[in-house]
Length: 281
Image (cartoon, rainbow, N blue to C red; front, side, top):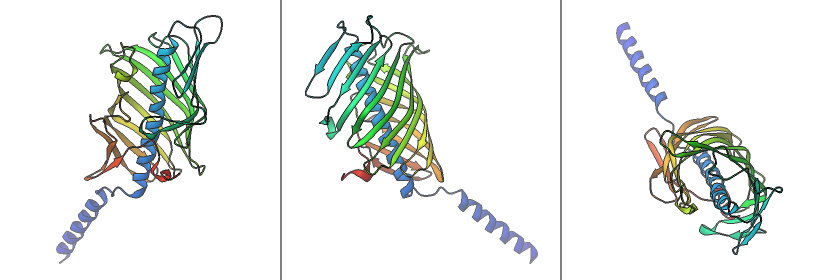
């Protein structure tokens, strides 16, 4: 009888251990955290596209220039008597609507130490009352040309410090990262829309619910300038009080979908330039 009882206890213990090892479902908190991260990635990558376009304009022969296409107003000047360094102000004014119903306002301010193709050149980006779809974007983004890697692809080191997104109700997402962007296409041309990069690195901060997080790029994100969001790659999420999960951007399609996964469970989400919580604001 004692032997039977012991066997029963061991079976029950094994069942309990198996149950504990099962992944928790993708609950609301995880889905909201993924929305926070996807928006943060989208807004700060959007700034990189603006930086690349403005950098090409700044390398023109004119020491100063002002360009106005319906919106924005772009002003380029030299900081002193020499051509370099160069200052750029991208001014969206009180607001103008671009592709995909994205409304931007305020200013992106850029300083270039030298031509973007010079190894060691540094480009610094800050913001002045800059908003995207009603969310205020802040921080300092520094982009440094690290030169070619072993594949002879040029790599840029990208660092974001003091990153913050503030919503109309004063809730915030903080975001900082250290990344590398390896150009796999478009670097040798002057057309910014054929640029393609592989992005690696990690990010940290606090999400909309005040929870601390770390995001690690598990499989390199493939970024195309002509697409709104990364077309492939995976980010691993570690969030305070939440079981780890992954965000997969897909298999190369230029679309607005991604997949969350944890264990055997997965869920498709829609990527946006506006947080789902503030869609009606």
